[in-house]
Image (cartoon, rainbow, N blue to C red; front, side, top):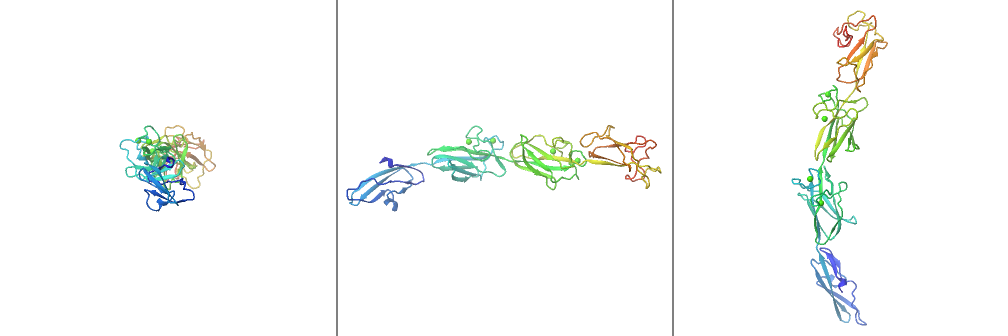
Length: 413
Ligand SMILES: [Ca+2]
Ligand SMILES: [Ca+2]
Ligand SMILES: [Ca+2]
Ligand SMILES: [Ca+2]
């Protein structure tokens, strides 16, 4: 009756017996069964469950109502469990390989599934990063959980005994077929400490490209993080103090793009100390490539924005010749006013375009807008025929005096 023999995984139960096949003598019936070495009530059942800890031969005696007996045997073979493990580690150099000095990570959730996607075991790594499941033979896969502040490293790089086997996205491994008694300690997962990029968008009031004391942060500015393919992967806005941060970043190449709010332009980038300069290209509003290492915090990625300045305001008929705008002295219409730079060349605006000259309006007023803060502008007045500039900087009130040099017509006087 060898076909009644059974195989069972260590620790599991198996039913033995089947339907008793002994044929009782005519007119008799089977009155009972006695199994050994079972003890307790189960030994009188036709089909008891057994869970032997080693290979066991069970004997069954079938007793007929006439007192006749028949004896049979069932062999139960106990298969040892298989082991699968064993390591979760910190892949500091992000190469997907367990290198010397890269430590284990404790407390990581590890689950074992059968190939019907039923969870058959759950564990956490110990303080050395080790885990192990002991299971019956079969096909399985392992799922490694998430670790706050870490990303999974690349899987299946090379040497299976030293690589990571967890899919970067879902933490799952391939299927492994375990035979009785197998031990597979190659199922590992590496995690890379995440990094951080930040941190500041400010108004570069003096236009020097550096964060100077008294230059405020700009709140509510849109900041985007781009991956190495220039795809936007995150978007944030600056805080009330102009700060921003992208955290939990795996190592890699990134770009940061800032959208200047209406009325703002980008200041000159890479002007001096990197921790306090602006890193945004004024054409693309985007930084150069930022290569972020594993666990690296880079808070030097800042953006200085400029608000265009304006300049004016008045050409007047200084009737009493005292160089001061007195009551009753009218503006002069149609005076040509132009801006030059410090070298006497035509001045450029915040967008680097040459600024056209203007003429004073009906009340003698003029204004240049869209100027770049921090730049020296020289105002040049061309006196209409019959006029010449008053003496400059008289009367002690710059809001009411004349600023043009009497010979050149240029400021300062
Ligand atoms: Ca490594
Ligand atoms: Ca491996
Ligand atoms: Ca500045
Ligand atoms: Ca910088």
